[in-house]
Image 1 (cartoon, rainbow, N blue to C red):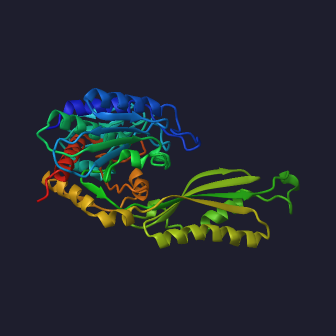
Image 2: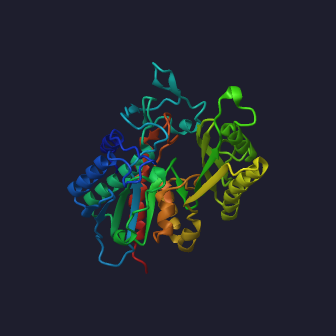
Image 3: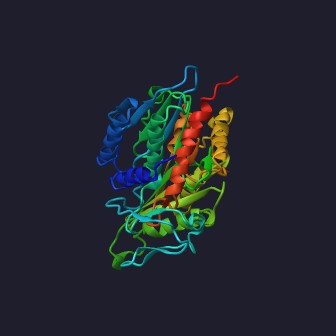
Length: 413
């Protein structure tokens, strides 16, 4: 059904195009390089015969596959993002293709002794005999979310070539800057014009998600006072010691490495420190809205307590919400999840319905009026050197898109 070679060629083309986003830049897109893939996608959509192909001033790409039935069908959409995370370099990606994976270690980089091993990454074991795409260990791969883009493009190509598959109007959208939390900020939901959509941005085959973290970012700033250390008694205030007190006051086991499922966390992801001033950058996550609000309040309260002990206002906290749990927006229209689940079951894929320990464009889009569950794109170990994707999982994702389109168009009695 799906041309494996064509899919792989398309995917390699996308992951070797540099599109890393930059949280320090306020423009949209946040990096000039993202335009390269945005324009490539526009050109490919036009070449394959899609209609209403547009790219706006912020690099959002949209296109339409017209309905091929003569009755009313809800307009649905499929969305993916083309930026890659700044957490790990995505420059000069050198994909490696492992045919008929034997179930053992994959030596990604012999010179640097970088090994992708199923002894550590157990999910690899389920893909024995399949074709695995990895990097050379010096970059991420970019399957997050260039696998999703590939799958949407291949699905549209298939539907255009096979008009016997009946479907309504389908909209596709590709976004910048998802990895820095701004992927949907300037997405024109009215222009997109879909009743609902699906982000193709999940991980392993079968994932189907309509819950995600409530998310916020927090910056803790501690002011100190630098004095010559030989004459510092009673005068020097070392901001790094105060920062250590702040860090140790948060629950030590409520961090990413100690939590799973719906458990929330505080994650210290960056420190810049000197005697004179220290900045701590946190992300705050929780599926439960009440717990989420309590976590934000705790961070502010700890600063107040430290300031009281110091008898000086040296610690300040700035908290900004980033996105919220889309469950409350999807549950009233659960039939859109049911359709995706039915599509997977029809293709002998076991649906894995679970909460996302992260966020997608879909969470923001749901609150903007476009309910948007998340479907697997097939990749594993995102945001690092050990990222990989089985080609067969990508092919199955293409089939899921096609089947969702087909099921949505089934004429109701």
